Amino acid sequence: MTLLKTIKAATHSAKRNTLENVDCANEYTGTINPYGDRTLVSDLRAEDEIISVLQSSNVEFAILTEEKGFLKPARQPEYLAIVDPIDGSANLRRGIPLASIGISIVPFDSRMTSDDAEISVIESVFSNETYVAIKNEGVTRNGTKLTTAAPVNLADAVISYDTKRAWESDFLESSVRIMSAVHDIRRTGSNLLDLCWTAAGLLDGMVDMRNRLPVIHICGTHMVFEAGGFVLDQRGERFCCPLEQGVMMNFVAASNEELARLILDTLKGLRERP
Image 1: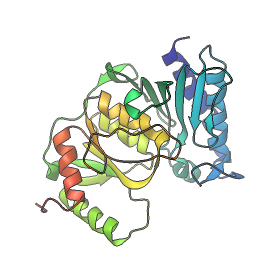
Image 2: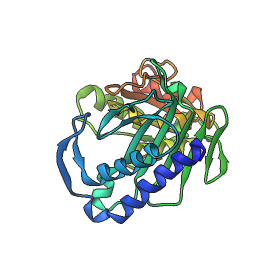
Image 3: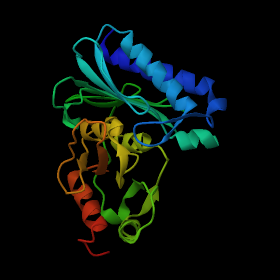
């Protein structure tokens, strides 16, 4: 089985398990994951499905997961698999059909970054959408090649903006600036889906500057880059983060670099409202 087939098999298995156990969506295990969140039974079961598929393959994977943290095999790993078993757990608990499963794989080394992602797969739980990014080969959805949206003015842009945090004055002010500057805001509650939709040209961008998104979400930024888009970090530099368990992601993803910089400048108050 090729690497891509292995990763797809892992996401398919997690999706099947999640759909078969929707009635467990509100159940907690009683434990806390490495990121300080209460572990849901559905997340843990989906994660276990993925780990089982990866570990039964003929490839030695180290695995960085949401619920179990870093798992290293007895032998030298060939790849690091970065796993988000269910992105959109709050939607799942409420019966909102927007959730996804994401995996990226990176050739294992002593120092790895998001730029080293070789293959990423994101699968929608409730719809027939499987997104695949392959380094230097682009992005497909169900086998069809994707590209980001054509350039638009900031005032015409429709973006996703994650607002799940305390609304302190700085966050409130930056949020008002960007919401006033763009045409409209969308948010699915699954950041991986929003990043896939940015890669597919359905959204013009996706913003998460909360410092709360774990590094397990890099499959989403990988999608945007490979589809021809651009991703900036909070400093205005090209997004590239170390693949370490405690790292949190902050980024502005957009269909092109110019739009990404306009969004970031607006958030920072470096650009006057139109």
